[in-house]
Image (cartoon, rainbow, N blue to C red):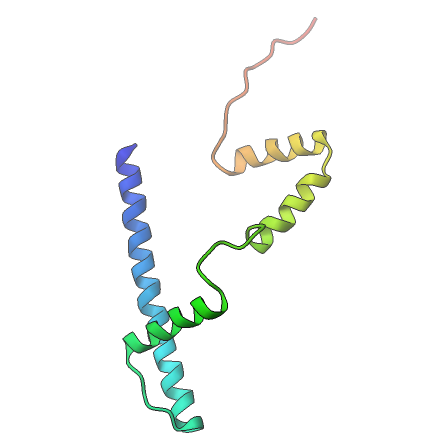
Length: 112
């Protein structure tokens, strides 16, 4: 069990590092392609591009979670609240098999 968590943390860290590198590279290339010819700005380095992304995120979006969760989560919550208890149980049963939480049901003996 502990090995699984360590693997997940390492995998998340590796994905985060790759996303960080790719995103910084893309911002650097886009800035250097568009801004100098259009406005006469200077070329920027990778680290300056990363700093611009962080600054923009802080100024316009912040790093805190949004209220109500993601767009899909908010829509799903609204649908869930409108379901009857029978519909909710049917949904749960359908998701158990799909999401790996399969619990075999006890076999009932046939009634005479």
